Length: 148
Image (cartoon, rainbow, N blue to C red):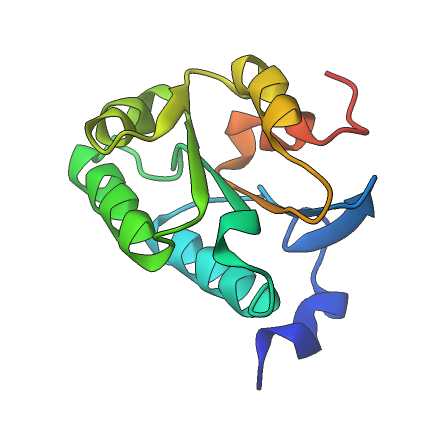
């Protein structure tokens, strides 16, 4: 069974898809651990399989469910995302992803509020944007209809 079949039955903030001004937003900012991050990205990749890779924007937020903090898991996730999405625009949000992202030339911000303006300026009609991270990162505040 493909991911598309089940998307209409997923609770709020789990692969929630919405379009505004020609930009498609996929909000999967409910929780984050290494497995959910990878599955979320894989689902997004399948959902956007007919979209040119450079029209994909993936915003990754810290995995706060990993307590105690696990630097190796954050490092591994960034390395995997770069491999899985070579032409996509990646953006990291959070202090746990900041260093692994910087090592790979990925734009990083300490908070969703700090990243919101940058994201608004870099997405254009036809783009697909995935927000994937822990609920505590508040990535949903980056949605254009959100009140910050």
